[in-house]
Amino acid sequence: MRVSVVIATYNRKELLLGCLAAVTRLDYPDFEVIVADDGCSDGSGEAVRQRFPDVRYLPHATNTGEPAARNRGVRAATGDLIAFTDDDCVPPRDWLQRHTRHYHDPRIAAAGGPQICRTPNFYESFDVAQWAIRFDALETVDRICGYEHLLTGNMSVRREVFARVGLFDEQFRCGCDSDFIRRVSRAGYCIVRDPQLQVDHLKVHDFLPYLAFRFHRALGSVLIDVKERTLSARRFVPLINVAHTWESWRRFAAVCGGGPIVFARFWGLAQLTRMVEVAGRLYYYRTVGRSYQLPAPHELRMRQ
Image 1: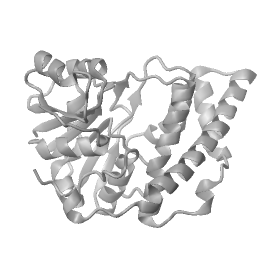
Image 2: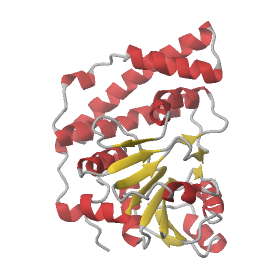
Image 3: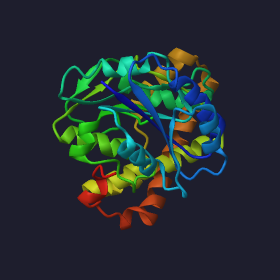
Image 4: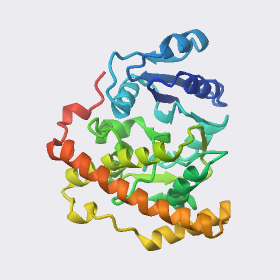
């Protein structure tokens, strides 16, 4: 099975070069590497061409967002399987072997796993504690309707699936992976989530960047609700999910430890991020959500 590795990038030259140093040395017999430039102005293209001449670099004049960049990579790919990672991720040498072993069943459309920060700070550990529950055990998911279970920083998809369900929705600057996986699942395919299928994630947040990250992540949930006509007033009320947060706290404390001060920081951040996400939903509903238009079929097909 030939694999095309697609990496979207925007003005993170040093991180991209570190990612490519790992990706170009993957232990797999038949693969290509495609970098989809999203309007870089930091010399990324020249650096890649000099250091990694075998990498296919797709330049682009303007910044159009990660979904659009990934779509350009998909359209240029020649592999039977398309594997995605981010420019701030470092896959292990057997990464593609781990992905391809899940495709023995033709009903499996996509596979993925977590992005692991090896030296996490408080904010990274907090974030991981909230989503790591999804990767507790290997499972095949027949239908995903409520949550995002695969991330484009560590995900592979059969090429034929894009031809059937379409490409990433480019109106989703954030959350395009969740929208895509829902379409894949509703088309009757199965999804594999593998907790051992890991990549190293190099980006580490501080306090304000982490809040900004949570604010902008709200865009995806707003557009999904608008797209599926499930938007309700409850999405704009900053109520914390106590049961889920308690489970996240138990996971966080088991890995990182925690006394009363850490407990207070964790639950305080949980309340704060909830309010930030609600603010993000309000903002993006007013600026993007109300004007969202379902893409026409020709906008998502795999044209060259």
